[in-house]
Length: 416
Image (cartoon, rainbow, N blue to C red; front, side):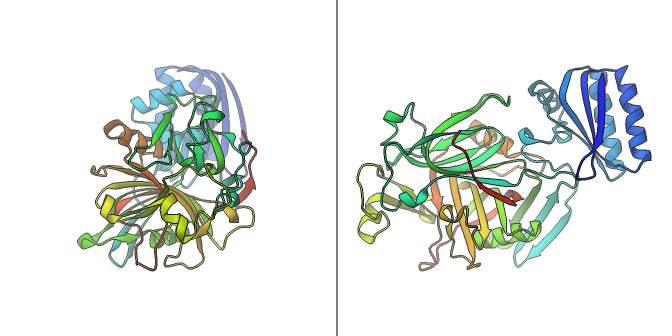
């Protein structure tokens, strides 16, 4: 077994292993780990990119040292794990030892880092202490063309997503670009799934799924504009309300931002709906030109408003991005939310499911979450989350779970 070591920028001790890990080669790795602790390094990343084989003794060695480093208030985790190794770890209920793009989040603590009580809401906050996630938000296309339906037939581009990303925008899951022009609608990517809402009334979202998590297993959607980020979340909050009260979405986003001490976040929220406010397209936007789609005369003909009367006590899964005082690069992709924070800009899409008890914890990834819902249900709807301050209608939740990260880099992505 080949072993290389170094210390990264986060002062984590990185050990790259290759070849086969078994009872014999584990002895060499054990010597390195002992010296690591002696030198004061309690956070260790084991890079498995070149690991070809692992025996049951090698797996047992890793799990024992994972627990040992936890006892020192540190961590020992694996990155760049193969699909086969992840399947073995999931079978052993040991997926918490993994972190990286395909693990979706990296919270391996056994108790909340913090309890928070705010009015009638109780939050349990979990944070991975050893992991710095990818904090880049990419923007694609030009949403400014949406208002006057100025998209040309040559504007759509293919954009790829993978099980390690989240994203949203305006696109189509049609087979080719020729058949996509009448089907552009809201879409949402989360884990292994991309969902798309055709611009029709009284229909269910389409979806596409990747059946494994190999890095080369990607799928593409014909896109007019989109946002994309990684879903390697290292912050999780479980929240619940007393006496059947509810928590407004803008207040929840404020809590998430306060915990990350960041002005910009990416997030996935799953919760039981108390109130709901969303909108979706009901007509193909490339069918006519040069009409202000948001004008009073055109709005009701092109959109359907979704309210609490439609989905009270259902489950919503939100994928979105929020920022205080918008950034120049992505300003056209975000709109004012008009909630309790007047400087809040967001872009949020939501899936709707029939109610089922929320049994998810901080140990479950966003991929686990969406797989559970798709196994037992099908998505009823997909819409764009808005806020209606005039009629005092804002999305709110009774209880739920949030996965979130700070965003520190914004860039215009390449069309691929």
